[in-house]
Length: 495
Image (cartoon, rainbow, N blue to C red):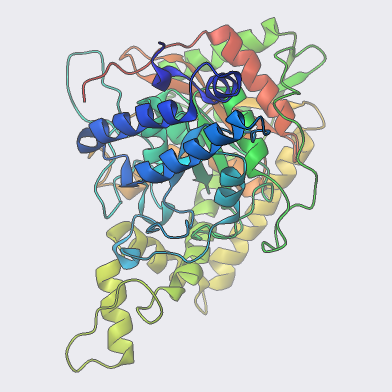
């Protein structure tokens, strides 16, 4: 029998429906991979093998009774530990929420269970989704399954904040996983580990039940091994939710059925501003390869301007921390999670002690930045200005899409770096998001697909950015690249 853990979402769904293998066999195989890799990769905070098997048994029972199976019938997935899961610990990778077991289910995870998916476990991430390397988790670093081809065994970053998701999918611990993207947290880790991931238009997926970082930016999306699997997952995750005031009241398109690698009649924009001085040569080559592949698919390539791109990163690192400082005020030791109550302490002392003990260094840094830019005397100088820049960036994209249908750019400025390389310099770490942040600020759908390997044998990703609500165009351009890149590389198992 084929190694079931080498199969993706579509192959598992179709194989279970056809009776080629059972859902329980699939869940059992992936549960074994999760257990075998945990000590080395630390991709999961909590494994839930029984939940995966229970969902699989229900699918097998439904098939035996000739009942219709869901869109994800028989597919076990990983759930980023930012999504509330009823009865299963949800921590946002922070000590302040350690031991918190929600009595409710996030809208996105409930949609996935309703579609027939099972949960292999809760995936590790940067604490409160704040990070680009998965080194800020209270539960330890996630390690990428990839290694450089120079014979060194340095542990590499899987990207962040959805590093547990990217590592698990790449290492065949799950065929797909949920991620969230605030400033690139689906796309950058997907690029680092040679998988695909899409951030849909802001509002496509409900934020209800997802631990908030920056509410005007956070958006859930899928991470999987290829474009088709991302389309299948996104169809199950998306949809209107009255419990989220920013949710789009729009029908969910049939993205999988609409997939086509034919780009004839489409225009692809290449932003001049993304050609930065000192750009990594391998990244630049992969971008040129992507342009050639889309031309081969029939697309016309046009140069475009996004003149305010250079202001995107500083604007993001004002807006996102400002929203975080407000959202994280709820963690005070009173209602749930950690409570640090020194002897003889008053209420304010408890607040201070709880937050000091519960939040990690990066979370504290962003809370301090956010509180500062929102404070009297600095609000107009920083936060108001950043919001104006955000509007200009959105307008840049609006004008660019008058000339093209999608935009092609690198996903990240480099391949994966070694764990520890950038932790001493937060600004260097923040620069990892330079290509991903603009689309987040504008609320646009954007996807990363594998483009090949660099000279060290590490994956590189290409990013496709689309018009609002045009996930289909983004997926199709991604499929055109995928079908021509012929990316079949996977990490050699060392764990």
